[in-house]
Length: 279
Image (cartoon, rainbow, N blue to C red):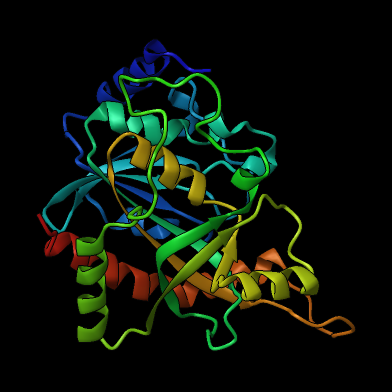
């Protein structure tokens, strides 16, 4: 378990590199980290230089914290994240979100690459997450398990309104103005790293899931525990396979390739949200 000293050590290491005070955190998933390269007056801090920060080992995750300005907002952008399947604990995976909290960040916007469970979704489209299904958390891998730090948040966290309505409405307006396909739906979190079987995809569809991925939900839970506003968006990188004996197979390369289509769309939406940031 981490202590306040652990978080403060990370905060001090970050503040030694920049005089900017970020108020919004961005978490950029597989193939989406190039958005951080567009920040003005940016300072790039490798994760290895931040005490306690977990290192990402996945291709497509650059492993930097980038602090700078985007559409008039000072943001701290994660170029890639650590995952539960890499062998980290849930507390380690969510350490960056807690550090953002101690940095004074009040809002976090998360992105991910996800499989399209909903048969109407197409590769390259975006889905605004309005709710989630936390399969790892339901079977004993919730990031809030263990002693609760009452100075950060309450023991029991309500998640009926996990994803901020005002932020979602703003994102929808920006997407509509720019003719960007933007769905709203339910994200299902799995632990990975194996992709889902056809039977699992059919099960998720029955449960009401629209996309599936291996991240995000535990970060959302920790952010809400700390009272942070949350917005999250999936980029549909592949259509989930729901039948056996098919010639198709999901792979990480197609996830990264689809990111080339998703990044411009996601960049437009995120910049629009930041420019028209709702109070």
